[in-house]
Length: 251
Image 1 (cartoon, rainbow, N blue to C red):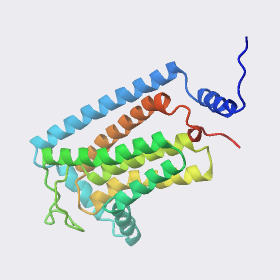
Image 2 (cartoon, rainbow, N blue to C red):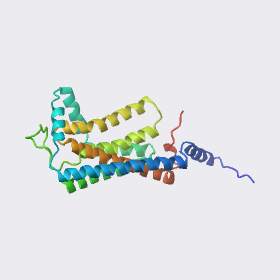
Image 3 (tube, one colour):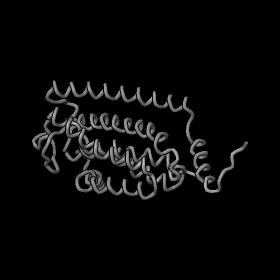
Image 4 (cartoon, rainbow, N blue to C red):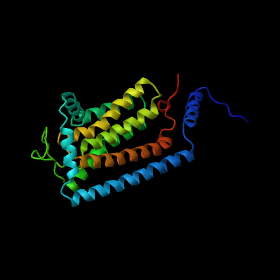
């Protein structure tokens, strides 16, 4: 006997069918997960090698050459851009930015996305502090390069770069998968993506980090990004598959 569907059940069933339609097959998901896992392993190995070199060698001549080359750029527009890009990553600006993004995600019904974003925003700074404390590499000194503002604490890896790569990189991922192709999505990807790309240059240009600090931060931040995407993909179909707001539909 065919089961009747109550009128109130139809919207929920429609959501479930839409989720299934827009979800990759199990085989495709396993393939993507494997690719992410392999990438994560390669990145962690590269970070381990770089960390070993930094611990065993006092300095790299290439670091000084890169800083000198960037700081030879005297264009005031470029200097202002580098200052603004870095300014966003200091507290309390970084905390406010993270809070605003997470709150917006929850307001619009993206509960799993907001939860993972909050976790990333909390874990990345803690991991950065732990790495800096263990490696305790000194920051560039004013007698070698031009240090715009003297900072306390250790240098490797760059906290700004790790935060931008891990957190803003994850927001770029969410923007790409949740918003249909439009000028809004393009604008958001350009805004967040440009910060991720330029922050490394800005930290070197301002004399707060060596290039190797930045490279290491991109590696560790990239590992955090991949880990957050894997965790997001793992939890989405398990806990929030029937979340209506998570389904992007063309109107």
